[in-house]
Length: 68
Image (cartoon, rainbow, N blue to C red; front, side, top):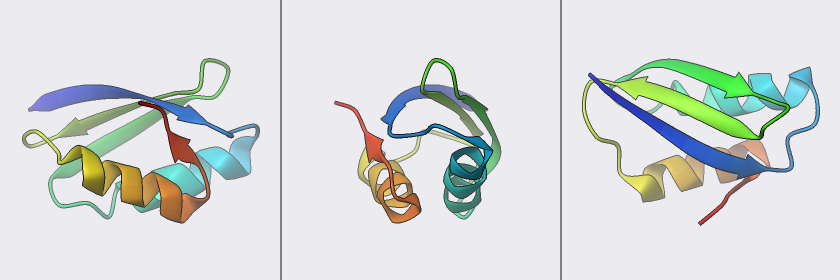
């Protein structure tokens, strides 16, 4: 298992949390997604390392931006 933390901008409410979570769980190998709305941090647990561009695209699809 791999756990990775990402900074995400633009999340302000529970809808944001649901949108980001919904997109990220669609990625192959993702086991869980935890969003800390106050800190703008998304923690993803997956079977192995994820391609950061896949994560970026999923977050973008949800309407938010991956920092960095």
